[in-house]
Length: 142
Image (cartoon, rainbow, N blue to C red; front, side, top):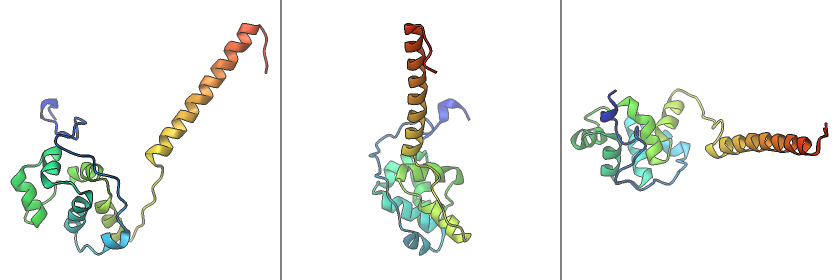
């Protein structure tokens, strides 16, 4: 893909978009959707974002987006993940897993991943600090 033609999500920019608050859509609400389109529309509705904020950010034509919402067009599969990030919920993913008789388990939240990374950095700094103190005093504490 030409870097000049990247959409706003790929560039890390969200034009005209307020951040959608992270929302946990209950599985039973998602499961009531008869189609993936229903889950996509639920994802959009639960976000509280305006359609314009979504289609501009995802780089989808306004008319095509309108058709997608009505079911007369197909939602581009490569846009589902950015849609869920933008809308702050996983309704389409939950629907697909439920449809296939699977459940979902979050492996590690972003906060947990960052905390683990910071703990590793802190341990490395402590070791470095201990080594410098030992060198300064000319002895080993090991």
